[in-house]
Length: 627
Ligand SMILES: [Zn+2]
Image (cartoon, rainbow, N blue to C red; front, side, top):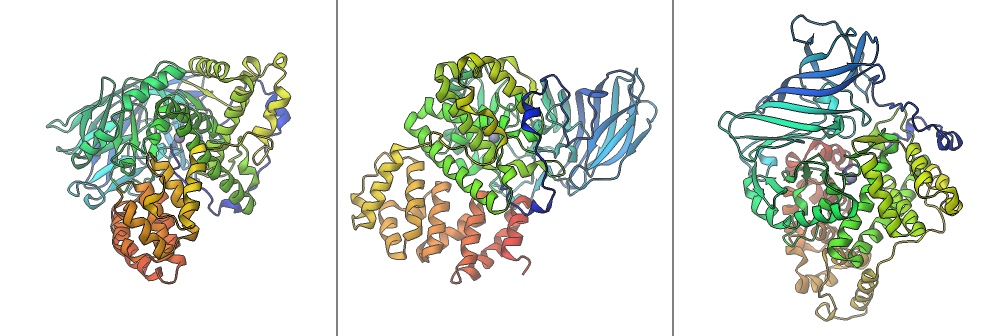
C-alpha cells in the first residue's frame, strides 16, 4: 500500500505499551508460536485452507449477500473454529455438505476487532459454510455514487481490506499470518464487470456472472473486489489495465512500460510468482495512492500525468508482489517487513528503469518525509511508534502506517547494502524471497536469518550495523549515510537564481522530471508572492498542468500567495480529485488564511459529495462541517 493513512491522529490516549524486550526478541526461537493480537482466530487449533465465496452484489442496495464456504483443518480435537467478523449479519451456518444448521456463537463486538464468530465443529468436520449479509457501514466496502466516478453514469464498488477490514465483508481468519487459496462465483447487475485479486475476466458477460480462481495462498488482507462499468486493455503478454471507459486510453498510455517494470523486477529478485500483473485505475474519488491486491493493483487516477512521470507508485505496488504478497509480515507489528522492503525494491526498479540519479531523488524526498514523521511523533509523545518493530496492542493496526515502516525500513536495508556490497545483498534478497515464498515472517525470524546468512559473526559487521538499535530503538540511528540528490542540488541553484532576479525563461529547467518540478515548487513555496507566481505561470503554465503532484503544490502556493488567476483551477481540482494526500493540505491552507477561509468552505460544501468517507472523515473535522 502506498501512504494510505496519515496516522498521526489523537490515539495517544491509548495505552503506551511496553515494547518486547530486545534481549528476548533477539534470541527468540524462530519456530516459536507467533501471536497476532488483531485476530480472534486460533490457527494452531483449527485453521482455514481454502475459501469458496458465493456472492450476489446489490449495487442498488449497497449490500453483499454471500456464503463463505471454508475448507478447514482441525489440528487435533478442536471443538470450535473461530472467525473474525465485524458488522456482518450472520444468517445461517452449516457444516460439510451444507445440510443441517450448525451451532455458532457471535461474541460481543470489540470496537477495533469486531465480533469473533465461534462455530462448533468435530474432528471430522472438513467444511464450514457461513451465509451472511454486509451492512451499509462495512468499512472495507466503498460504494461510489455515479457522481463520484469518472464516467458519472454508473455506481462503482471497490474494497480496501488492509489492515483488518476483510472481516467487514467476509467472515475470515483475518491475520496476515494465515493464508488460504480461494475461488469465487460473483453475480453483479448486467452492464457491470466484477474483478478480484485473482485470475480476472477481460470483458463483461450478459448474465453478470463471473468466476474467479486464486490458487496461491494469500492472507485475508489481500482479498479484493471491484464492480463497475470497467473495460480492459492489454499492454503486453502478462500486463494490462482496467479502468472506466473514459479513463482507459490515458491509463494505457501512462502504464505502457509496465511490462518493462515487471522484467526489471524479475531480473533483480527472481521470477514473478503470480499469474498476471494488471492495474485497475479507480475513480477519482479513490482516497489512497495504491493497494497491492495480488494480480490486480488498485491505483489512484491521479498518477495519470500524461507523461508517465508518476509511475513509481506502480513500481511500489508491483514490488509488493514479492515483499508483502509473497513473503508477508506475520503480524501488523512487523509491518516494516512489508513496506521497508517494498520501498527499497521500488527504488531499485526505478533505478533500473530511469537511472540512479532518479532513484536518488526518490530517496531524498523519502528521507525528508521520515525526518518530518519522527519530529511529529516525538512532538505527540509517540516515540515508541518510531521503532521499526511496533507494539500495537489494543490499537488499530492502521496506527502503524507511518513513514517509519516505509522510510526507516528502507534506510535500514540501504545500510545493510552499504556494509556488505550490492551483489551480496541482492543475492541475499533473492534467496529470502525464494526461501520464504508464500510464508510469513516476523521481525525476530528475519534477524535470525540475517545473522545466519549475511551479518554472520565471522563477517565482523554485527557491531557496525547495530541491528538492535535499528529495530528496537526509537528515531533514526546516528552516523548513517543520508540520501543526497545531485539533481536537487541543481534545482536549488536555479531556485536561488530566480529569487535573485533571473527571469523564469532564463532558468535551466530543460529535462526536468516531475520530481524536480515538485522540489522546485516546494523550495520556492515559503517565499512566493502573487507577483513571482505570475512570472512563473506565464512561462511554465503551472495553473494549467495536468500533473496532479505539481498541481497540488502550485495550488497550495496560490492560496498562500493569494494568486487569484489559479482559483478557478483550484475549484476544478477539488471538485474532481478526492485523494486525501492532495486535498487535505489545500483545505488546510485555505482555512489558515483569513482571505481564503470562506472560499474553502464554499468549495468544500459543493465538493464534499464527491469525496470518499476516508477523506470526509478527515476533512469534516478540519473544516468544521456541517454548515
Ligand atoms: Zn506499500
